[in-house]
Length: 425
RNA sequence: GCGAGCGUAGCCAAGUGGUUAAGGCAGCGGAUUGUGGUUCCGCCAUUCGAGGGUUCGAGUCCCUUCGUUCGCCCCA
Image 1 (tube, chains in turn blue, brown):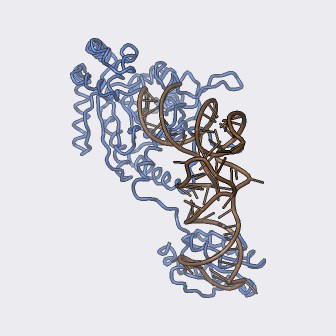
Image 2 (cartoon, rainbow, N blue to C red; image 1 turned 180 degrees about the horizontal axis):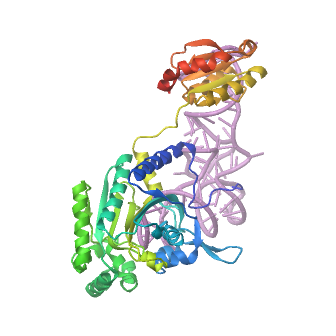
């Protein structure tokens, strides 16, 4: 192909798919507004150091997945691989903490990770995320989870499971990590290859290995939950109690560890059985130390991110969405008629109707065919005779019924049949 | 970064070494020079992702490359 195509891992969202996105976005906005979350928009690129410090230098995201390059001022900048870092940076930079109380923020936009694309994974993808900053209360964890659950429920997505875990504080996690290494070391030879590497690099990641043999060995491994201190323990208990109270089903999953370094205490994922290997639709947790690590005041926080491409895949499995039908389709032929059609169409639009005008100049038969396909409830017809008489023929597509209306009377006429039009649309 | 599958028109595709690249959908034109969901007719790939090679001959075999799909890693 000589022509330029979209880059690997990027794709166009065409009009017929956009209706899914619009529905998802409008439902999410509505629910987030009701939960008193406020939208924040941060830049798509940031200083590379921001992500290195927040996500963790040792993570794959930072180590090999970032779109990092030098700009013309020789600054190292990175296309954001996730949303939390930018939101926290903004929170600190603008002193949002000084506005007192808790900040409930949400964002929606593209993220970039240099990975091999596969089902539910692209290099440019979109996330919707929420962050609750300024409170350590486990009630915030629950509120965040609940708002995610509400969005998913409103969208009608089925067969989801909420996986819940607590990874405690960094201190208790150190202890657990040591115990896990101690337990696994004798089995090292029996672990899958990746997990053998991880044993000294990042042992917690062995927990979510997909290898069956590794999972079998993990059956009798120590559990993170046994290493929680009293505070973590009671926080986790309260989270569970409140979720139960709210009727939000969850499963404790002690194998759930999250990939980004900044998490502590509550972590969770919402997974779907219908997405293949990339099952996680929502992932999040508490990150009490991140704000201070990025130079802000001590600010505990909790948040999650939702993978929108994955959501769209699920939505498409449900009821198919169709493009919105229009009210009027304007058919015209002949110089005078075609010019009058422009005016007629524009007037109707200013009255609040949706109007498509046929610009082809082809035979009436062809134009009617397109009118039919447009799904318009009515057709407006202008030919030489109508142009001469300054009238228009209004034809109801469903019944075929048709009559003459003077162009001057058209605003009144269509206003009087507004009900009929919207019902037919 | 690793493994496997696949790339024929806008879309879905047949074709598996012999040459005139099926068919369907969509589109366009006509039957119907001013009236739509049906029907009928016609048009729509000098070319099979790209480049190279083998062969008398390649969409069909080989190599390279790009893209894509599924998985691993990782993550939303």
